[in-house]
Structures are given as structure tokens and as C-alpha cells.
Image 1 (spheres, rainbow, N blue to C red):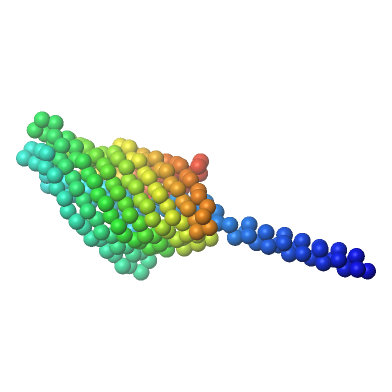
Image 2 (tube, rainbow, N blue to C red):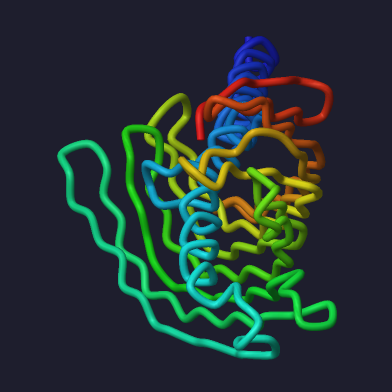
Length: 235
């Protein structure tokens, strides 16, 4: 009889331990490709004053200096961008620098750098971060209808998703842009691409790394491919 009771108690203990282990496994945070697609879109979107708005601002800051008298000129400015809508909010502090480079007496490119601190929130996520941008802008010829951007954007900070599993993550994001063409009239991306590298460290100290590409399709659309899975978003 004692042996039967002992065996029963041992089975109960094993079952409890197995249940506890399963619960721990279920609670493990996993950052998905879809989570990262949302994060990249948040970096790019004009609605939260992302990279698409930052490229537009860069062009508009440089445009008054695209003449021969400003060859070699270096300008700088500080900008505060705030918006508090019902579904989207953002608040940023920027410092911008640009240098007008010329080929002979003709402006040929602009070296652009900027830094920011800030935060944003949408129906998808909320995020707090620091950013840097280092770009070269060309296409200043009168005959050209587009500016071309090449360079690197980095963003470091925290985000919390508001959808799916509502995970939180500390992120290091690097986007390397190549031949991104932006219209001189409406400042919308027409074409070009970028390579993305992202590291996410979760609140349970797991680290996930992601690589992928961005292709700008025109009409404010782009495709984001992460580990072989492609998403289409508006920026």
C-alpha cells in the first residue's frame, strides 16, 4: 500500500514539474519577421516622421544653397518636430548639418548628417530612440527630376508592440540606402533599395538578429523582405 501511495505521489510531482517547464517554454518571447517588418515600417513612414520625411527635410534644407556662390558652404540647424493626434503621436529633437560640394563651380552633391532623440506611438507600437543619418544627395542638375540618396541610417532604442504578443525589445537598427530616388516635386520615393540589419534583445535577455532588404516601388509603397518573407507597406 505504501509503495502504491509513493508511486502515485512521484507521478504527481513529475506531472507538476513537466507542467511548470511547459509554462516556462510558453512564456518565452519570440520576435517574428512580422514584428521586425512593423519596426522597419515605423523607421520609414512619413506618418510618424520617419526616414521618408527626414529625406524630404534634408532636400528642402539644402535647396536654397544649390548655386555656385555656396560651393563649400556648410550649414546647420536644429529642429523640433511634434505631433499629438488621436492615433499617431511623435516628438523629436533634431540637429542637422549639410555641406555643398561642387565640381568646378557647379554644385554636384550635398553631404548630409543629422542626429535626433525622440519617441513615437501608433496603433501598432510605441518606441523611444536615438537616430543618426549620414547621406550623400545628388541629382541637383536642373535636367534631373529626382534627388538620389545614398548612405546609412541607424536607430537605437526600445519599442513595445501593441499587437500580436505585445512584446518589448531593445533594438539596434541599421538601414543602408542605395540610389533612393525622390521626386523633386512631391518628395515621394520613386525607386531605390536598402539593406537592413537589426538586432533585438528581449526583456528575457534573448537576442534575435535579422537581415533583409527594402525595395522602393513608387507611389509611397515599398517591399520589406526579412529572412525570405516579403511584406508591402506604405511609407
